[in-house]
Image (cartoon, rainbow, N blue to C red; front, side, top):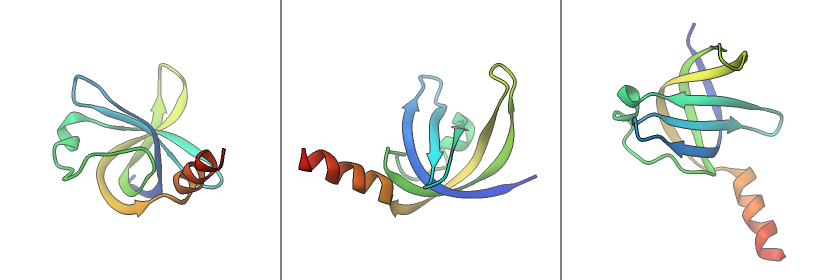
Length: 94
């Protein structure tokens, strides 16, 4: 079953295999996500922490950890995330 999720990227890591691992979050929750290399090559921009995105894919259980994970097929940029912007503002105030 295909789902579409909107959220902000955090903990973005590029693996040498070409896979991209990240957390997708909003005001109320988070979910681990993976964009496999075959799909990552079709994304026309670099995923970065703080970026707001719309992703489509499927949610399944990652067997090793027994947790839900979002297996991403495609990504669309939706701007800079509010959570990241507020985090940067707080850092600047310190």
